[in-house]
Image (cartoon, rainbow, N blue to C red; front, side, top):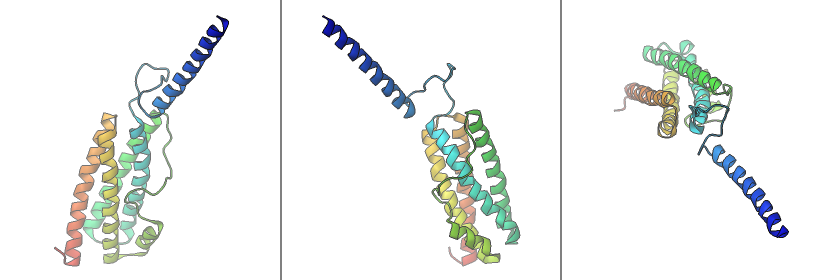
Length: 194
């Protein structure tokens, strides 16, 4: 009988250990949330946190690109869209950094290159250009940048939990789609394409 009860105790310990490992793995995968001292589920899922971290870095580069325009072109269309991009994306970054902070995370300051982001070489070419050359290069790079941002924002709309973040991502899709349309139209005018 002793062997049976010892085996039962060992099996229970093994079962408890396996169940604990399984719960941690499922929580890490976002299937459910381990208690954080509150009965309220967190507002953000793993996709939300990842999106905010990535989009802040993505926006940082767009703002950097937009702020180059002031000293490199006198094209009113480029100057206006650059100002709009800079203001909108800085505000979006402020919101996302605040939401990350409220969720217990720091604002990211750097990250890997993501969809649509300009390379270091392309950024240097942009810094060295001016006039029509700048207008064409800026619009080309920003169109690609926006396409990458739209791809990321659409994934958030599909997979995010936070209603306010999903709404913000949808606004990004709409605004950046319109900005791409405008820049493509200008590029067609400048190059004589239709």
